[in-house]
Length: 570
Image 1 (cartoon, rainbow, N blue to C red):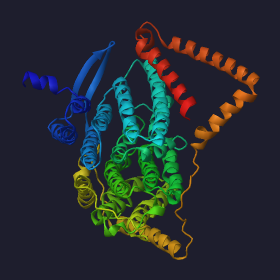
Image 2: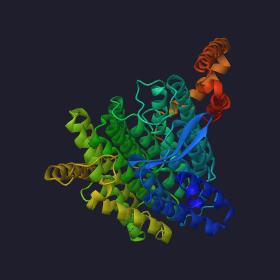
Image 3: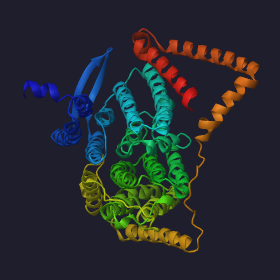
Image 4: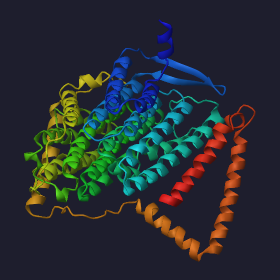
């Protein structure tokens, strides 16, 4: 092996992308954008050239960091993230993106991929936060007031999750002395804190609104790129560290159901797709919670195919937004005449999301539903069936119908730019090829696959479910009781922190000065106790006593930044 190879081999592929993000800023505009497409493709080939092993190991603050752990779980997530990065940046060639957005997209993908290959929690935390900082620029790049404030609220959740993750890491390391990122579980020291952090980034119920708030406010290509990384990285982290944690089954079931009702009444079709994203994350969380080999294979494969078909659907809606200036269902219709290719690719994404046989969603979603039945979770099994019908209802039918086939609203729209069509074509091809030949995906899953999705029972059961949902949509439209698509604001749980919390703060400041002083004094006392408790975590060999800058300083700075963001932008 040459000296150059010995230097480059230990480099986590995500680090290559982060370095590439810095290079992209220095290149001319056109070259920068093509560089962002080519680099992930090169890294896909590089990834397939490696055997499973720990390639990167460095010593940091007396800890041994594993910066590049390649195994079956990290490889498949790293591979799909690289594909998503290449497709997203190819799609962005048809959008008017500047070098800063191009660089942010590479850094975001790089931070996510570097975190996937992290073998320890310190490396995981560092790259998780790099991905967070880079991703917010894809929201701000739209350069509107709504995008700016949505991006700041996005940071509230992401930095908050980072603070919680850091606290859990400190507690865990202080108690165990280990920074290894493997099975953790709720019983481990700091396990609840770490699960909470991953849960926020996975958009668990009640802390899911950052997704619907921020993603639709990003740029056209930014929304496509955002859809593939943050939540799937959290799914990877859950699969790595909390497989078989039963509470996740019930959390995932709630995730799979409640967004359906919001997706049905939401007018903004990109926001509909973000609610649908929540539903699909619920399937993955259920599979991780069940924790059997077939369930985990189902969760991982569903994460892979979901990245593809959700990107395809958002690409099609982004093209519609680019050509018509709107993505509201009440203002769209008849676009199949002028955007036939975009309509066709949208239908492929919609059918894949709905888990039709011979399309990618079917070969993954059915594994999770089967795993729930095999383990006797019949209530969960019924919930997942209901959620599957709901996905057809709002993503499989509603998205393509209202955008392309409903009453023509008179938009003189042109077909999407060629780079967008090419990106959609590749994504659509992958959705079909994986559905027709599932072994292409199954051979890369973490566990050997002994499962055939194309049995008579699986196919007939799914077709019956899909036909019932399609019939329900048709009947509701014919008798005119389907919820009308009108401009409006749908209140979700984010009202409590966006409006309610701020109103409470203002009211308290004006009318309850005495109460505020009592609360503040109590808070100071509680914080003092927390500080004293944290001091006890540090001993002669502990992480806090040994690395105050890494532990205490970062925690305090992050907490103060979170407080400022919360008070200003909630």
